[in-house]
Length: 246
Image 1 (cartoon, rainbow, N blue to C red):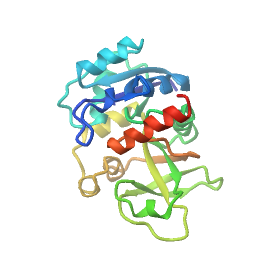
Image 2: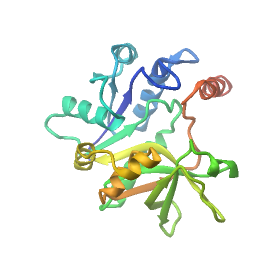
Image 3: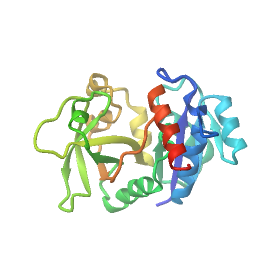
Image 4: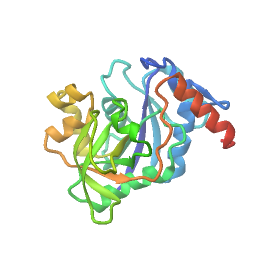
């Protein structure tokens, strides 16, 4: 495999406008995400920027940015546009879509995503999940859950469904985190399809792939990375950076 990591980012986030450039201990969030991706060492890294300000911040930090149409409907569309620009010869057969709002994502998470594609030849899309740590999480509609057919070792499973609804039973309830590894042809096929009924109902883009008959596998990670969706999350990230000297 020859992976590339692409990080979609745009300024017009609904709950936290200007989020990619939010300062976390003196470093813009998008730069932190880029550096974590580089540390994974799985392939080249670029930011698929929807705005010139983002591209400028990335390039000032020594990274690579591709300016994409700000009107693109999703992060998947944004990374495909960037991929077509930086790799017209289709040398990269695996594309990792790393969200630009996970400033302390572990490089191991990216490695696990790519390794899952290598371990499961029928897998079209790889992602990650973590066991709940608080029973309240399973009832939180802001946290997507994965229903998975687990492998015997308990470290990965084939995704049967994703939902925002409450899941019952004796745990673990698997919480989904938005890192995706696409086989290149799967990304092309996925972005060419319109939003599906279940995707629209749950507001979860990955359900489109399942409705199309694509195979999604999820690797188990040991800890959930901080995801910044609102001002409270941003403060939590700033506190983490301060207490961990990040």
